[in-house]
Image 1 (cartoon, rainbow, N blue to C red):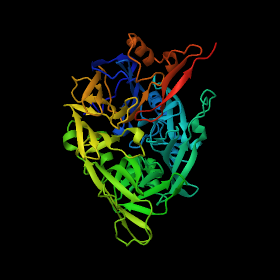
Image 2: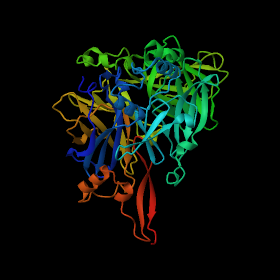
Image 3: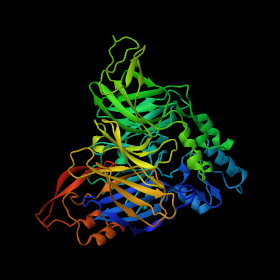
Image 4: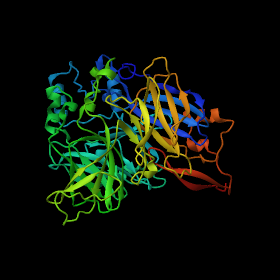
Length: 584
């Protein structure tokens, strides 16, 4: 398994042209940008956990049927400090770094003190966030790093704490049609309270970036949720939104703050302070987006661990949300590098299979309903919500499907009724071996798989002007456990799940986490046919030429239609705009 997990991957700084077999749809123009760990040893030191590796960005630039690949390590402060020292000197969640043994006793004492309230890493290796015209590599600390999506150059570091009091934040924000960004972070013992903070990054002001103003400077607290435990807040990886509500799961997968504060002195990682408490319930917090206040009903369910929300929507007075659940926290343990050996696939088994479950919550509870009665009257689900005393509701989910992870949807349906889920297929091993399209309505699925291939999360990109939910394509970066087989970008028809094309590259490509597709907004992808200058134009794009340089300027007085895209991470909404030629 070292070919996938343990070996440091080389950067591909100059774009390399992929070998395309099949035919890429002419309308598909843009950049698939991905993020994940690529370096696990620095000098003679080694990270303990696969999730700790230094962030390696990589991209597939698609233009006029041509594909170019490049990769580059995120030049974070963490990366720079480690490389300069030729050893791991910045701690990650699963790996505690220690001061140089040559330092004097005063330096050591200061180092111990500084780790009591840790300043976490800016090794942003999990996802890519779009904020206005800017793109950021993200992790689960308070730090994000702005990047150039075309050149993969690392730009400035941003600390959320300058704008909102959070020590941690998710890498799975939500976006609305206006361009606002919603996210959740944890504020640890701030003014004597630990709380979960939902914050909003407003849509950018036109021309704001040219004036040097980032939307991040206008970040505001949307609302906050008091943690049930001051010193044991819940770990979470994502959250859900519907049209009118926010769903936050306070699950019994908890961080022990006191243990974290002493982890450095005790010689253990922060990850050792994370534990699943099977005796506790999962609290379901529902926030009304219109009032920014929690709904009065208290909801809860059995203990579980959720990394990924799928979608949520409202129907007939109920809130429905779908999540991938585990019965314990064993998933994280399996990815310690000591376990990632040649027998990993055979010997490393989850004690709980990822399961897609649907929860249905009544938004208005009849006070006259009998205790123990089921408050859900929808005929489309078997999920139950049982009334308890003191306005509490115990939720029993409907089991939809087993063996799905890294779920994605057509983001035009985010917060709305939907039918299809695109996901990586796993069984008792956490390693994906196939891509699945799951139909919630018919409970059926379509599958793509190939021997020795491990797919990354599948991203859905809609066909321009599409009316059907599954009218589009699926993009997934595929790595192979066979050294003789080149990695490739897979392009599937999202409706039929047949392969349209693949773009193979003779490089070492890493297994990544998350990412997004950035459509080329400078042209109408639904109408413009490939030109004879396609290779030259593609090369110009991947070499860093701006989209403005690649788009012809309208003649004076000319009106030209183009497509602009609302910044959704899994594809794009399309809105027709007009570009006016200016008189010289």
